[in-house]
Image 1 (cartoon, one colour):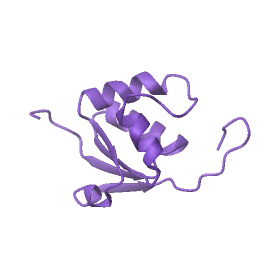
Image 2: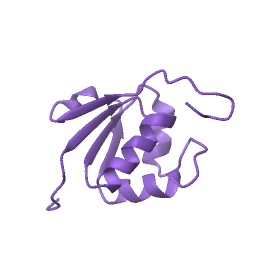
Image 3: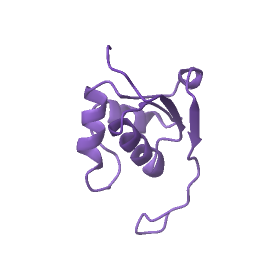
Length: 99
């Protein structure tokens, strides 16, 4: 890669909350590993489409995946070298998608 990162961050639960946190941390210079058990979310994000209705999120996700700053899978072993792991599973949302 050759790029100097601020650190490695893992995010467990790459839904509405985890994907936003992950994309922003990647943009800020962290190497981010998102893990989710929902294969459809993983497939869509890795296909560079955003399964969530969040303004500005899709272009940011696509950019960070393209720059190899953000990786999403169902492989929890990708978290083993992360200095920090954020857990964002089961975040209840309102009908307007507010946490």
